[in-house]
Image (cartoon, rainbow, N blue to C red; front, side, top):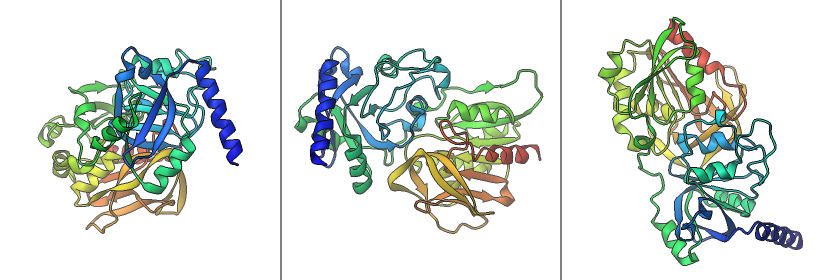
Length: 383
């Protein structure tokens, strides 16, 4: 087994030397060191002095790497892909979840240099390089993932500096705990999103905490969407005359977003409300729940979730490092749980006409088992 591992490592080193990639290191805040090679903006002029830090999380999806990289929920994080080949089918810009990548860096085992797909407009590495995102490739991602799963969430530093310099940088990285990244990814001003111009639909307000485009497209099937900055007050939302409020996904620690939870609290019972991911956590916080940071988060497209009303199992797409504590709340019922670790995955406040889910029913990437959640919100808005 050791001989086979050494042979594979030797083959990877030979491959990357052929591509003339300079070596790089990934160092975790607990001192673990992983070797790799430069990609993305680490290859730029001045890349030798570049050090990127962040909280490292592993994503188990086999595809959808562009959607992951451009998901604002990954702000402040370094994304480790467990699937060995990332970039196979290149990049189609129509698949972006936002205008640019929001993760701080990408970690891969292998980075194909020749994508194969008729929709591809640019290869993944060039896209990331154009947007200033560093890559470290040739990493033993299996060992790295197993280490994170055993130890828990860690910060890291990536670069071509010495091991001691990178270790210090990793230890100084604050991570996401009590950090407000929403202010960096929310829309700076309100705008209207209309899927089918000329249609007469109800108007919905969407509080943008880092919303994905695929969610916006699903909401537009319910009504015309007024997308609002996360700092919008309850009074300003009510003055819009909307028929419902959507709380979007987003990055960071919900405990650092008390101002948004206060806004949500003022609107519970006054408007139908639906939340996804961070929006779920903010609704729960407004209702009096506590949130906590998980040992390592849920990032992938194959998480089994049980719907408690009928014991139906849904395979879901997920991306979160924080979760809602399973404490009883007056008038609140928990509607879904994760079958891997019993994390709360949904809640409902029947008398207040509010629902939320921790997972991503828009599924981009991922399965479509949970699309019905948008239908439930539609019924709430129309009634």
